[in-house]
View 1 (cartoon, rainbow, N blue to C red):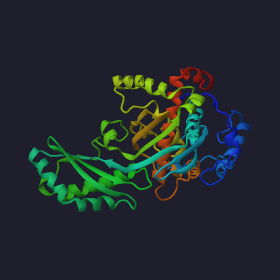
View 2: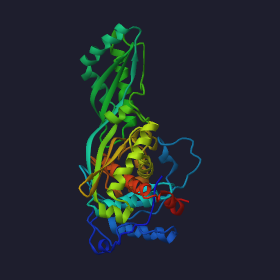
View 3: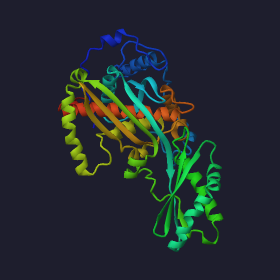
View 4: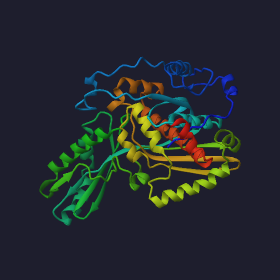
Amino acid sequence: MEPATQLTVKQQADNNSKTAAFNGQFSGKITPPRGYAAEDIDRRVEWLAGQTGHRLDEFALEDPANFKGLSENQIGYLGLPLSIAGPLRIDGTYAKGDFYVPLCTLEGTLSFSMTRGFYLTYLAGGITSRHIKQQLSRCPVFTFKTLEEAHDFLPWIDAHAGEIQAAAESTTRHGKLLKIQTRPIHNRVLVEFIYDTAEAAGQNMVTIATDAACRWIMEQCGSRKPSRYLLESNFSGDKNPTHRTMMEGRGHHVICSFSVPDRLLRKLLRVSVDDIVCRITDKQLGSQMAGVFGLNLHVSNALAASYLALGQDVACVAENCVGTTTYEKQGDNLYATLSMPSITVGTVGGATRLKQQRRNLKLLECTGEKSSRKLAEIICASALALEISLTGALVSNEFASAHAEFGR
């Protein structure tokens, strides 16, 4: 659910100013030109090149051989539109500057709505982002015949942690095992392997590394070795929304915030700070009554659209959508924050090698060292911009009319 109401602030001041993009280039109008015709697409492509210096190549279908490792039993291609939203201005730990965010969605109004949120925060000075940590886990469970055997396994793991780490890291050039945590339950022991996956999202990386570690354990544990193990107990919360993910995180943990004056809210969203702070309580009560994981309106929409465009594992939206959005009044300003403890993204591996997805990552300049952390910050900021736009539409009672105009 995304609102999309027309921007109501004149953009003359922005058109007359040199709006710096992350590569130092600029070009007039800072929000994407509208229109649905083929010539409108061409106009946006030229506009984007002027804003960023990145010219999108002619679209071409991938060679089917390039999908090995990504898809099986291919019978054809499915066409989906690629859109753009911006400008996102961000001051982050790794992401700094102005960005135009590629989106792949069939959700009417989403691209307009995210652009509205970007424009609002851009005029207010941008979004602040901080990268908290990066770690991805895999958690096998080892089963023993007796409680005593399971109990004796705990100090054995501690005593051999270095060797287990070596076995795990022997499978990867870039992944690092950060720590091993044991959790006994009945005659079983959950052994959580927590990794830094560098620039990869890392799902396959941690699976293969942990499998090697488990095999080493089974070979070296001696006469009291576990009777069996499962490579994943589901304690890691892989592709599942969990309370543990909210508390401990999985993937990148990012927090974003912005402060916007009341006058801008009234002009662009047609709501006041007091309107949002007061009425957001209604949303939170509904969320709590329904047992929603996290408190947000539709973080999943921002994730799905950006993941498809950027070559990420879309199924991870299930666990990544547990973000928490809050609004508070600070003086005459609205202070908004989104905490996302789980953003499972990477800039190498998987579908990031496909031509279209690769050029979209280059558009965001998300390549090279620490680029996965930069990408996570951009995604969290995009989700926060989409949150405030929908919040404004709901509070102003324009949600239905926006969809009637742009989403049908």
